[in-house]
Image 1: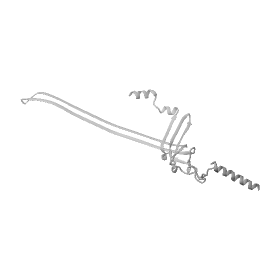
Image 2: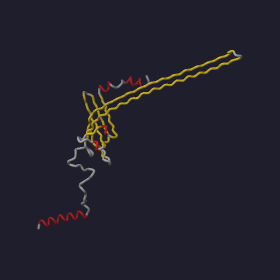
Image 3: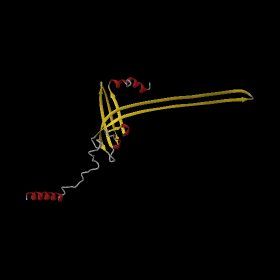
Image 4: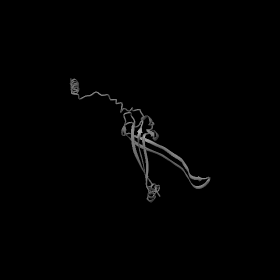
Length: 195
């Protein structure tokens, strides 16, 4: 009898909740947030961490050759009865040759762990992060932002920097060594005024 009363009470409570809209039937499966228990531990939602292996090589070179020349002749003669009475001549010759070449190369190898900031509608992950290093009183900072396609993430939760879309990678140093690589203030001033 007690069990019947208890079941009747639960049924009445459930009926009251349904009638007043207090219970909603939703699926436990959400396609956007579902992650299988047997799947690899890859970043897929906001706040997840992802390791980026930075392997950037950049090389640029350009050369130019330019040349121009101009030659002008102006002359005036006056002949009277076959004999030269007056004469005037002017000749100019201008030439200009120029050659230039620039070449620059850079290489950056690093590894940085970033966090997912946003998941776009198509599933792409917007990531960003920075890493600060202090080595022998030299401060070095790596900052990275970009967009990662989930299919480019390896099984060990890493991605190559060459697979990042909208990538922005900066590497800066601060300290004695970094300051010695910059020109002095007076050298920059002379270059500014054209000396």
